[in-house]
Length: 336
Image 1 (cartoon, helix red, strand yellow):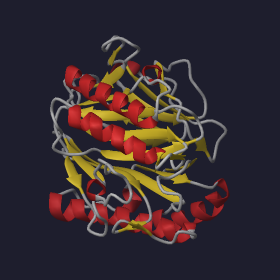
Image 2 (tube, one colour; image 1 turned 180 degrees about the vertical axis):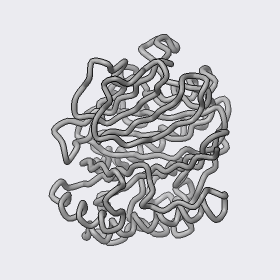
Image 3 (cartoon, rainbow, N blue to C red; image 1 turned 135 degrees about the vertical axis):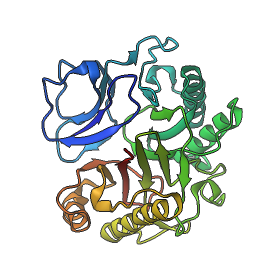
Image 4 (cartoon, rainbow, N blue to C red; image 1 turned 45 degrees about the horizontal axis):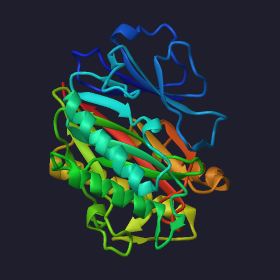
């Protein structure tokens, strides 16, 4: 199963997410901007942006690849490369720029470089990020790696020349692989942060979770002239700011689904997002702490989503030891 992002070259600003079970090898790359999750690398790949440092639970290999003719090979040197159209830029922070320092220092470096580049490229608004960090709940003295990540990200925001008015949608997942991985979507225009009435906004969390709060929106709504896209952050079994059902992965999944439905309802009721249900999402990623939970969660989630929503199952750790599952989603509507 593959995720395809189509645009019509640099003069076309929309992002379309279309699910295909097979890659069309005759695809005309002169007028296509494409992102896919694939089991096999194809010769037509322009650049393998990032081998996702988590384990796919339904295939031997899963690689996230961005293709498109509109690509800058010299975006500031040091192997920076970004893919773009008139509205969006998609890139990864080059891993070789991040040394073996502590997670907070590597994160500050990554986000400082990210902010520098998106302003240089002319896409100053950060709208979606994915972050993978090693041993996310491993203690480093008085704090764990996730808390260090939050502190490094906060320092980068504080040092940015233009402070953002809206935090991006985000996912942060722990991995067994060393090193920090950050990739992102930026835009020429700002998005609308969407919060969940059943949760404390992450950026307002009490300090018992982290000295520096997690700087992300529960979801971000972005509109261009032709399309509206709702990026839903990695969503866990949290009500208020507390974990729910610490030992029950199925009940945690139900809370995740309820939280996502709340975000959809808020976007529709408060921000005129066209009516959309969870069953109409373009794709969903489910991160599981334990691989042995796959069969139960796969069966359970289909009761909610039906058979048609593409769902990817990945193994990774959440930001709290008592969280067993995290779900992110993407949905969009055409405006023309």
